[in-house]
Length: 294
Ligand code: TA6
Image 1 (cartoon, helix red, strand yellow):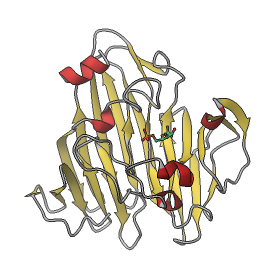
Image 2: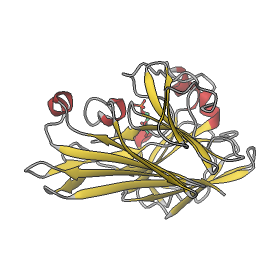
Image 3: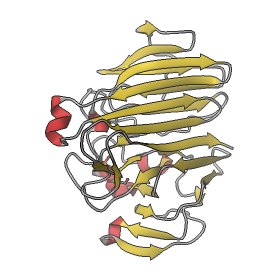
Image 4: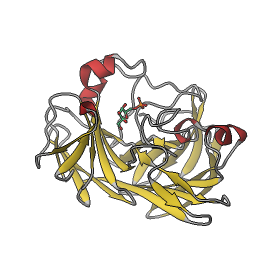
């Protein structure tokens, strides 16, 4: 995503400006360490490009920036649930308007904080009071923290994911390690399976790995780098690629889009809306992903 050339709508500081892509406002960070974009629609990171690198994040050239549709690519914030266990799929956070609450910067990098608070609409979908923050730290690496706090008088339960689309040179050549030995295969009706150590994809994949290692590595010989994903506050890591047929079925992904992306997600997976992580009134939880190129 070429952010640097977009016209500036507002200047917030030396490193932080607001730009617009169609109907979506984007917080643009330009720092000597890296450039990044965070859309207010969805609280959605759409780009992270450390100086001298290709973007680490894949964004669909056909993503729909109409301010309503969830963006295809980037880091969708799936919350307060993951998947199709309720409607809308992956929760409402990724299609809600977030608010920019803070930005700070120094020589090390820039921190941008967005907030999502309950509205009439969110309460009609999910009747709970919450305070959700997305803290995006842009430096040599990208750290994204989804911090959710229960500000209700009763406990509530959530699942979710930071659904990162990684940018790879060629999916057929990318080698992934660290996903762990066991996965739930969403393409086989949730069957529990055992996996190999090195994954090199040749077809569609949709798996929830239940024992991921602390660091997941994606070796990319084409872009001559290895991407590192380190997750915290999760109970699983999802690996997804729709492959050709899946891409053809999506209006917002080019038919060949699957060839250069791979989702490696930090997830709190749950089989139903009643299950997941429960927060008592006043309690918070942080779901984190840290991404870098080695
Ligand atoms: O994370 C994997 C997944 O849940 C897949 O099942 C796949 O459908 C994908 O997310 C994308 O979902 P979306 O609703 O964005 O089309």
